[in-house]
Image (cartoon, rainbow, N blue to C red):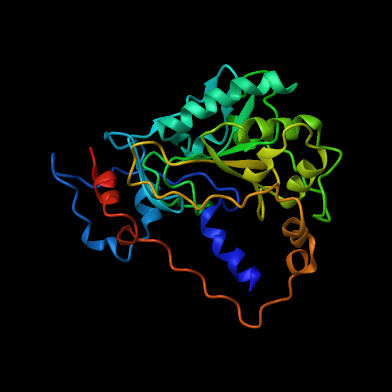
Length: 309
């Protein structure tokens, strides 16, 4: 039962690393001053095909619409690919967009990193697409401009070339047996950086691999209240997935239930290292894949976001 419940959370977080976006095409036309009509073929067409090929933000007021794994983003802002203390990776994906609050957070957090660690800055992975929504590859969440993947690899202290940003791999933090972090790669700076992100009041939660959560529980000193926001999840071996709360005055954004209270370092963490998780028995019948989301599955306002010019 517990596995089933946890599995349902799969829509909330990022999936496997994504591939480069296909060639982008223009969004559907809309009538000025009127909501865009849903395309006739929208029913059977996966929403990821519509949102994943739009190359620019919707010229509307900034709004996160829907839930983290079922929504879209109006008025997105691009995080500049280079900043004083950050660099954006995988530029070919065109996923460095977010609600302005997310961009503000990343700029604010990246400036804190050199103050709490020996890192000179951060490497930013996927945020959202220009209009949010489901992605062609990878993540189930990251749809409303409030999620960002931050590599657990420090910025190298020089500007990376575009080719390097495509080829460089993030550092694997988890040991081969999946039961703890890899001591060859893990440093005290890591838990201090995760703590700095979690202490930001706009951060709702942070997803990391259970082995990373174990290391945080073991090593964190001082105020450990931040641990409640750090949640274990499958994958997330190379990065932390930071999620912000819904922006103020944004009623169309549906918040996530608050994380459980407490540090999360007890039996609930131990479960992640049982055979049920690490060596699951094959299912008698493979689960049927979920049908992809269509535009009709998303909040109604997402049609106008998709069609805005």
